[in-house]
Length: 72
Ligand SMILES: [Zn+2]
Ligand SMILES: [Zn+2]
Image (tube, rainbow, N blue to C red; front, side):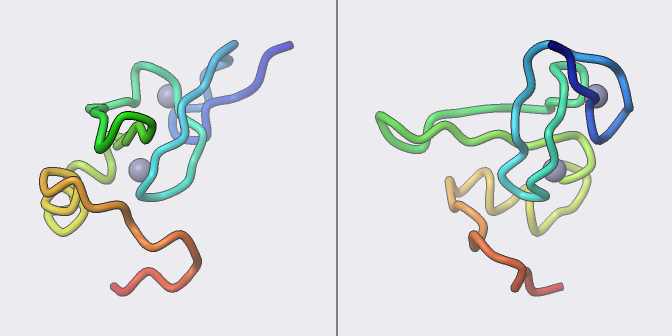
């Protein structure tokens, strides 16, 4: 079963979810991933990487707020 990357619209088998925009992205759109703890994997896409706020949050291993209340 395939699905579509929500960033570049490529058909993919396996997706990653960006922690900062919650889109399902392919490996190509993945900018970076790291482990913030033993169990939590953080994923950031190229779009969010170009957003300084999100990039800094990622570098500080801060997870975004898990809701719609993302402060612009
Ligand atoms: Zn993609
Ligand atoms: Zn993203």
